Amino acid sequence: MKNLTLTLPDDAFARLRVAAAKEGKSMSKYVATLVDRQVGRDERSADIEAMERFLAPPYWDLLDENGNAPSRDQIYDR
Image (cartoon, rainbow, N blue to C red):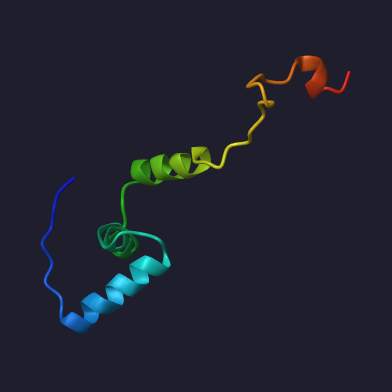
């Protein structure tokens, strides 16, 4: 990953800060997303990002109060 120093007018910087906050992203991550949309990215990066989103929480909590997973019979209601 490479770093970039960016100079913006004060009003553009303020709008960027607000827009990034609305999406719950850092300004750096938000700008990276905008650049990806504008100039594209390789397919491998898009595939990796899609897989990371798919595997991201929230996970189902299947453990009982003692930390035990359900038995096969419990899962299939036998």
